[in-house]
Image 1: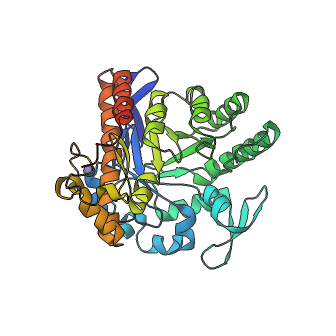
Image 2: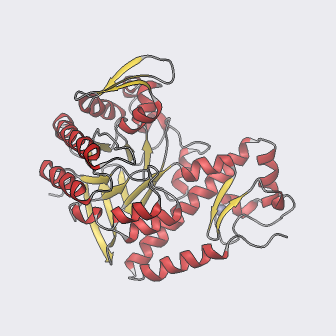
Length: 376
Ligand SMILES: [Zn+2]
């Protein structure tokens, strides 16, 4: 009998893999990009529109949802999928990262993190056990182990202490998660930029055993060169037959480079957040719609894009509605950006399947180097 949650690799090209994660709520084609649905919504998008861009899975933030509207309430209302009208898989983070970046009056101990809500000042305690319970109440399909995201930069001694704490929390997460067929628990590798620590973290996690593994502690300000430096060796330390998830990444060229280095899953707020701040991602690089050069430009953001924004709306219109503060500006730009990201992932998957990832990546970089079309 096959397990209700499993990962299958269908093609390889160099270190890159194309595959499929099977879950009771549907399949996730990898390499996959997960749009971020922080507060039970992918901002400015209807769930069916998110699905129409090609997303197989979205990410929910435990920290935000536990504070507002509360995980117990979501549980009583039938779980996060029903609550937000998204029937496909959902991955939730553990809350650890956002507690450390958003909450006030934080106190980190062996037990977990005590903090005050940034919403109403109420006091909370997040531990590996409570994080597992909250993610269960949300009904998450892929649950992340509770860990400490090691800040960057960190000297080796600090990075070791932080990694070792995360590994003790990983074991407690595994024990608290228990046996939940059809749901997966992912462990998170830490170790900052130190290969020995990354190796030790991978060994400890593998000994515990997880359905998938994340590479944590990157995309925290180290820059692309440092990140790729770690990705040259870190994915290879994790079990070959499980999905590998690079948390919080990233820009389109970060994703291409990480896929080439063996990463299968990504999430990032960039396409949605940029959609609301007037930045579009295109094959020829970023376009700032606020720029006056677009004010009378009747052309779409990207003539080769098949999204509803590019099919029917001009740069001039987008420029106008953005300047006027109209909600449709966020809706159209977010749709385009998510469509662009999913097209990129589909292109990467095709290229891996056809054994031409190197050529695909070269064409990707060459087209971006051309930069945006000449102004009218
Ligand atoms: Zn478009």
